[in-house]
Image (cartoon, rainbow, N blue to C red; front, side):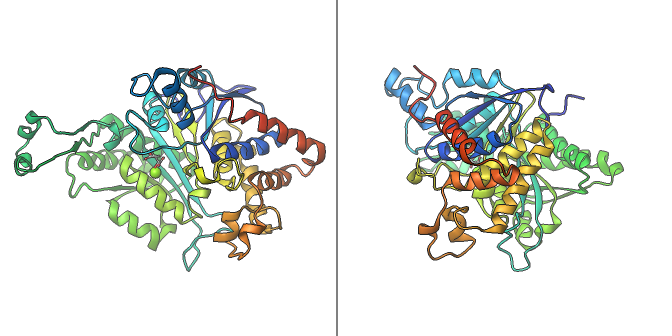
Length: 419
Ligand code: IPM
Ligand code: MG
C-alpha cells in the first residue's frame, strides 16, 4: 500500500511551510494565524509565496492582456510548494468574466493531484448549531477534489461531431446554443477517495462512512462511485465500520434533520462542494470552516471562507477558520497536541466572550450584539486573545514584536512572482 497521505511525506525535527496570504482579507487572516503560531514557537520555518488576483494583475502588467502566460499562480509559487513540507493558504479573490482567468486553488488541486478535500464540521463551544436541539456535530467530509465536473472538459459551442456521440443528443440538435461539461469519474479516482475515508474512520475509531451519490439517476458516474464504495465497505466491516450509501439529496436533507448520525462522509467533487458548505452551516458557517487539499506529493491547507474584498486590510474578519485550518496542518505535520491547543483556545475565547476579543461577525451573528459594529475586536485582537489562552505570557513587548514580525511577513505590497 502507498504511504499514509494524511501525514507529511517525511517526519522531521523542523518543517518548511509555505504560507500564501492570497488576496484582500486573506492578508488579515494570515496575520492572525501567524500571530497565534508565533506564540506557540513551533519548529516551522516559513516560506512566503503568493497567488490569486494580485498575481494575475502582475502577470497582465508583464505580458499584456490576453497573453497565455498570464496566470493567478506564478512559477515561483509552484516551486515554493514543491520545496516545502506543506502549505497554508488564506483566501483568494476571483473575478467573473475575466478572459483567461483560472482560479489559483483549482489549478493547484490539479497540478499537485490533491485528490482529498478534507472538510471537518465540528460544533464549537460558544457557537453551537443553528438547530433547536443543538446536537453535537462532528462530521468529517472527504470530498473528491480532482475529477467530476471539475475535470474542466467543457465544450461551447458544442462541436458538430459530439451531437452524434449519443442518441440522447438528438433533441438538442434543434437548440440555438448547446454547452456541455463532461462529468468524468475514474475507478482509480473513486477508489482513492473512498479508501481515504474508510482509512480515516479506521484510524480515528469512527463507526460509519456515508456516501452521498445519485446512482439511481446518474447511472454511469455515480453508479461507479456506488459500486466501488460498496466493495471497499466490505473490507472494513471487520473493523466494525459500516458503509452506508444513500442518495445525495437525502444526505442533504438528513444532514439538517439528524446531523449527529453522520461521522465520516465521502462524496464526489460537486456534491462534496455543496454538502460541505451545508455541513459548515451547522457549525457556524464558512467563517469557522477549515479545509485541507491533500495528495501524495503535498498538502495545501485552506479555509473554505472567501477573501471578503470589502474589508481588505481592515482586520475585520474572524481568524477562526484559518486557525482551525492551521490545526489541521499541524496534525498533518504530526504536531497533533499543538493543533488541539488551538481548537481549545478558540473555544475558550468564544465562551468567555470578553469585550475586545470577538470580531464583528461573531458579535453580530452569534451574540446578537446591537452594537456589533462599535464593539468589534480586530482580527489581531481576537488572535492575540486566542494566543494568550495557549501562552498567557504572550503579552507586552513579546506580543508587539510578534505583531510587527507577522505584519512584515504579510506585506501586501511585496508579492513574489512575475517580476
Ligand atoms: C471550495 C470553493 C471552490 C470550489 C471555488 C472557489 C473554486 O467553492 O473550495 O469549495 O468550487 O471548489
Ligand atoms: Mg465550495
